[in-house]
Image (tube, rainbow, N blue to C red; front, side, top):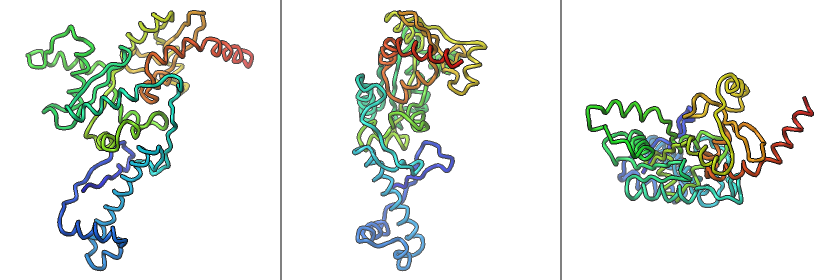
Length: 310
């Protein structure tokens, strides 16, 4: 039996505390199933047994709420104790995200220990199960993602140049997708990433999912669609960041936005939140590009209205 506890600082992880099995546990299970309350059990079995019964009920309640979110889309978030309800679709109803690919990735990692996939050439996802390798899972994932992105480079970790490769690996930003999603207040929640067993694996850290976004490849795919893109850096980037509407984009040359020019000449800035939909809404990178391609008339209308208000 386990007890799920929430970090008082609202860290996303649910901590697991082992409760030893034995005669008392079996008695408590039977008494609770019969309708007894922990305070009543304390009178006959002692204060420790009553507290253990309370923990068992809390864990049962949390697991029940997680099960409800997974199966019917509504329940109490175990981190915040706030009611959670997820909608049937993401932000792009006519363009499915990579939910199915993500579920397959997690399921394969659960069976084989680790798995890696690519979405639209520029989004790489790696899932790693606990206890697979002697090295930390994050390092294992970073290593796999690095060589997947750079197949031409030999592995140096077993050589005297291992430190050189580690420095290269650390320079490429990788996101813990579960942590990133769980900290957000919007998006496609981890509770919908698989079966109840797999969701629990993700919540307790038995399986971790890491994501790497290749911005240069993303820009090349935009170019194929007739769009032009360049990083917004320098004073303009700093000014945009100070507004609070964006932040530094991981892997960029200290840019807080991407300047986009559509085939019809419409120009606008794609902020960090626009790219964030790839991780939070599970939107495919090509879906972001296709929707930007269609956005010209709406963007120009908004820009004209903004000029009138100045």
